[in-house]
Length: 316
Image (cartoon, rainbow, N blue to C red; front, side, top):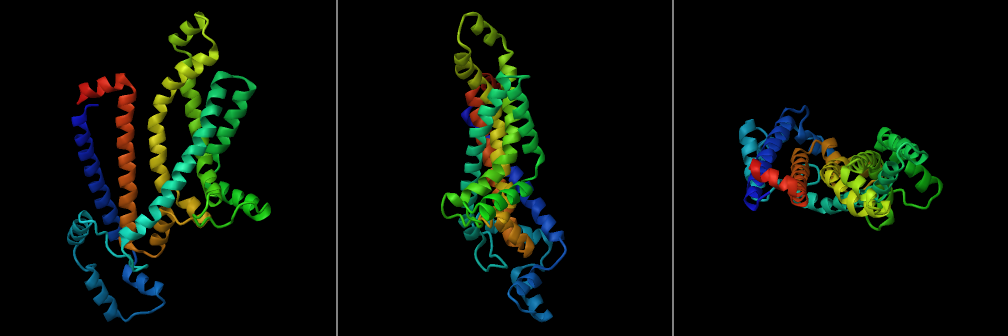
């Protein structure tokens, strides 16, 4: 992928983000309920209808859809995502304060997943049809089948309530408070990723270059680590980027269970309080990070594999 193709991909990212913002804003506009009433109820007051109408007018909620969206989009382009109705704080400030804890949790979950899934996938591929293969495949089946919220509750009950070796509430301060939510998120990903690693290694082990290397007397350990591993990892880079992107939007379950102060729990709280400005800001930021990660994965994937680089150059 040539350098001048990167701006084209960035343009595609901007177009997709525009579509996401328009769709999410439209869904919130059509959603039942009144955010102004929710705002006053969150403060413990029952306002008069006149006050509610004045507040709607002040917030611009009485304007037509396109006017509201245009005003919001114009403010976002200037770095102003509005004020949270429920928390009475700038949306941008709230999101930035929760973004790093979510990124920290996501990266730790990915690291745990890689540390477990890559060795397991390699072992299952090398011992295809053996006892080790069947054991690994059984555990991957469990990982894919069990829902995150159930795994999180079991881990919370065992390690925090019964054994009391880890804190119940993950306030985000300290590494020990990251362990349970990170393991919860990594559990399902490990099952899926182990299967992908196994399939990728099996495909590479059946290639002619592996047979040729064995015929030349090269040890299997050298073939596996120096030749098979680099080629097998390439197809997994895209999945890794997608996993990171989905984690940013999928951490909400673990964050709510463990009371972790991340972007996911902030989004859930915003939905519960019908805080439209905060919901829209969270959706836009999650979509932005997801798109940028996929862009980086595509660029790195093309550079790591010369064949894909040449193919991308021909297509562009």
